[in-house]
Image (cartoon, rainbow, N blue to C red):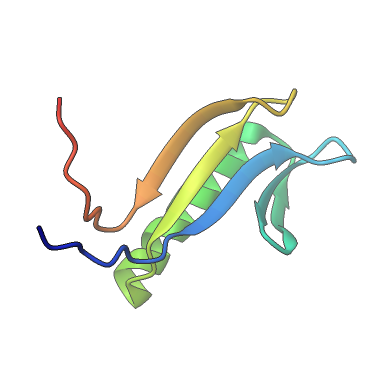
Length: 85
């Protein structure tokens, strides 16, 4: 059996910030902020899609509720894993 090398996927989160706004955050902290969650998810989705098409950067967007629990997860770019179902 041959093992494939897993390609790195950058992880971003949409979460509520301490000031009440919603932010797109990476490991270093907030990258962008918007007033509403819907606006932030729209901006983040467009940004990560464009990042993949322009630079082939694979990423994952984790959307969190106001209480910090995970609401949704989206991936951008090719997924090397095969999933059943």
